[in-house]
Length: 305
Image (cartoon, helix red, strand yellow):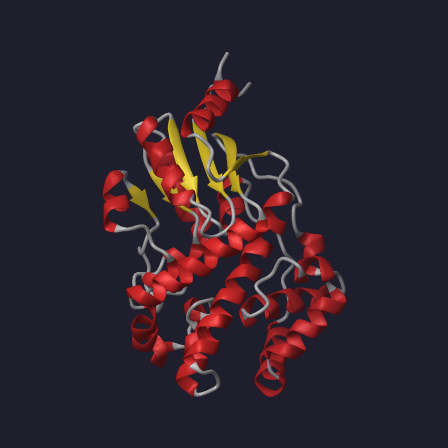
């Protein structure tokens, strides 16, 4: 049984599992609003490749943190923690229940539990790592992180050099793995949280991912990526669905190879999402085809006297 604090219902799970549809149903049931915790959907220039909710979906319930930033903005998970908590405080004055949805476990945890505290590292360490990345490429960073911090290596987006450099910066500066600074204790929040997870057999998740990528291509993903190509080095664009097409534009891949890589890397991303969320024992998992009423019954049971 939960206390009578405001309630945040978090809908989580791997990409393409149906989180958006479920979050809208829950929000409509409680006549409330939705806060996105999907870091790929913050940027207004990225639409098709990030599976932003459709115009109809956005109109069916109030949404926040959807295409509210630009790829040219400097935006971190720390910024999201501050902004999301401020918004939650504001919205809880109107609603006793709110819904948060997304597959970005780090961002969701930042809102619910707060960020972990890391020691300050000399800027020289990061400068050296940046130079190594420029000379040796991302593979050298991946190999070092796998050696010194295999736990974080299993979770991190191994193609995002900013994340790799950050983890190695902490390791080189302290001699301790980045993962050892994680989960140091939750921050105090003035709301209770219920986690609802959607899942399916791996083969089903992978099939849904493959079909979604094919649909994105039909919807104009290649053209969207081409418009963004000149900005390909921006941090916001170091993400699956865009970087593979940038390599196609560079001549490194054929189009067929690029699309195949998008599917493969999205499947890897879904696997990392599963690893991240499985460590949260508070998540109640439901099959992706679950009857919506059963989810509501679970929420009501958790909150009943």
